[in-house]
Image (cartoon, rainbow, N blue to C red; front, side, top):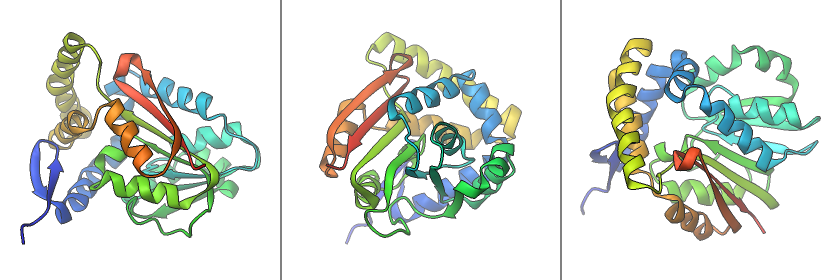
Length: 247
């Protein structure tokens, strides 16, 4: 029987090795992750996350599961907009969660926040538990993306909503080439300068290029059972928001 493979950036690796390799990347960059996000995107990731919240329109009392939630950025925004809501930040990398818990917002919101180490492909929750499932810049690192989407559908309550924020593809070939030049030449160097880790940021750039385009990913969301699947491009398609409902 042939061993199943997947991609780790531009490399082909055994499927059962990818999670450990991704874990290594995020363990390595955890302490500098928030700073690097600001530098790499020139702060625009904050605008994208705010746009995500605008479309999501959190409501009081909702229960959020923020998968690959890392240092809590999205959960903090959600709780800020939804009095009485609760958020569970789930991440496979404990050191990312530890960094998140050090943030001032984590202390202020501790009564409404849980931090859980877990796998997007096998969530440690019963079915029909959450009103909202978010994943930001995390789904491209999952070994089997379709499994993660299936799990999102399972844990959402009927009427629950999925929202994915992820790097995507620019619709214009010339712009895409310019963006690739920036990504491949500048970001790994920034990673070396700021986080002392060129290889992890080389992987992160490559993983963006390997992720499906907007239409293909929308089809995958529909395949998991979601309805009313739509997407919006951000910054001309550098990132995209995908939304779907468990109807």
